[in-house]
Image (cartoon, rainbow, N blue to C red):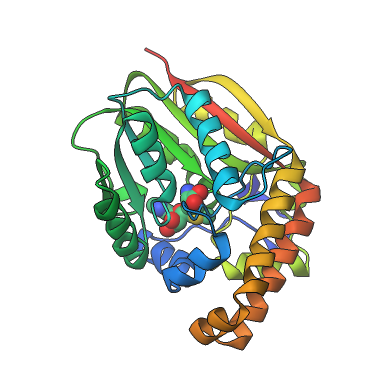
Length: 294
Ligand SMILES: C[S@@+](CC[C@H](N)C(=O)[O-])C[C@H]1O[C@@H](n2cnc3c(N)ncnc32)[C@H](O)[C@@H]1O
């Protein structure tokens, strides 16, 4: 990756660290192995989506905003009854469950976090959803058969070897299958240089953030053999409103959250969310729809 070879950035201020899959898992889980209830209260709504949602006029509540985003994904990917969807980085499986139940899909969710997997399986059992959860790094996973669609939502930022991931996805998909990735993209490579706020956010994720430009992401997808079918831009206000709702949920549930993770972590998480809101000025949020060509 071109960005990993930059020489003008001090190593500790640089994004892009290559780890073994075990170290990657341990570092990523610094964030995701916190109690599910902590994230469920913050993200709110029925689907506990831990990524930007859509807030068009009239959308007031968390559930409606989460469903609006997931319906957009379904529309852009052309999801239809009977398809098999892999959600790489499925969180607590709210998005996978909603998509499978609403669009008649079979689902597979991948996560690195045993705690997320446990909660996700409970949700699937509770709803009787046609889905299963696999605890695996994408590098170690191979589906039993090729699938119709692959979805990631604010997940590929964790992947150092994004080109390797896209190559895997190409193999996992049936010919003509769709890969849809929603992610933040740097407006310019210069924003990869971390200031103090950026370092704080990076540490929250165990320094597993590999932010890229949209151009780099689409080039890597092309290199893996994908056609770029469509790029859908999501306006910045949607992420800002999502974060505002997460902060309001934190405030509303302050007592319970502090009892779960302690005062210091509660405070750090609020700082992280405020910084993440501020960082939006240097990034765009885009959904990239790629198709396996052959
Ligand atoms: C920001 S959360 C997004 C969750 C979900 N996509 C959503 O929108 O609610 C990132 C997710 O990616 C998963 N993840 C991170 N690195 C991964 C990897 N190398 N392989 C599989 N999953 C990974 C994390 O465990 C977590 O579930």
